[in-house]
Amino acid sequence: MLLNLLPLLEGWKYTPKEVGPTSIDPGKSLKIHIGLKPGWLITATGVFSGHSEAKYATLKARVDAYSFDATPIGLYIAGSVNPIVMGLWSAKYDTTNNIYTIAFTPAYPLPISREIVVELLAPALNTDTGTPITTPTDIHGACALIEIIDLDAFKKSVKEVLGVKI
Image (cartoon, rainbow, N blue to C red; front, top):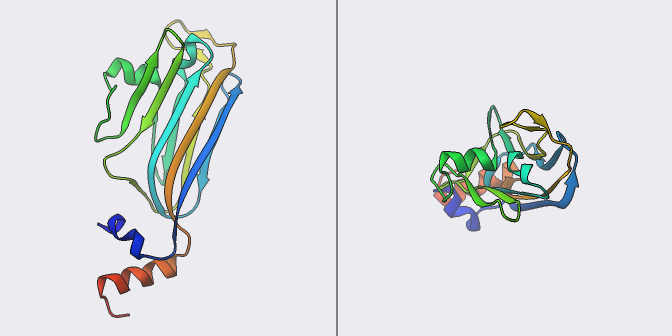
């Protein structure tokens, strides 16, 4: 309900973030967003390409004490290839052109009370064969958040809109 009232509220902002496209070495990560403000994570995506083992790359998010991560191959094997209520799915799994995309599109944005980190990790190991990966992975990522940038103004405007006496 509160998200529907955002146009009437103060003290918040829409924050889109994007990184890449770039190439990163095996085992390295690229942070899309690090934040210390309350709000909501609306969406996050990671596109991985450059070689057949890019399907082992990871989209990882930590929201307060909760975290999740996924690989394109893991989602594909699980059959998560369409948007789902939970939010994580393999939006593209193209073995011909070696392009793999993970999308986090939850039915309702994920609340953030204190802290969020969204990052992409290049694969270091082929988990099918146990062989180290030596080729850099091409990575492009994005996320979108609603951040409460002025908590006092936000609270005050919520009370005003809901008719609560201050």
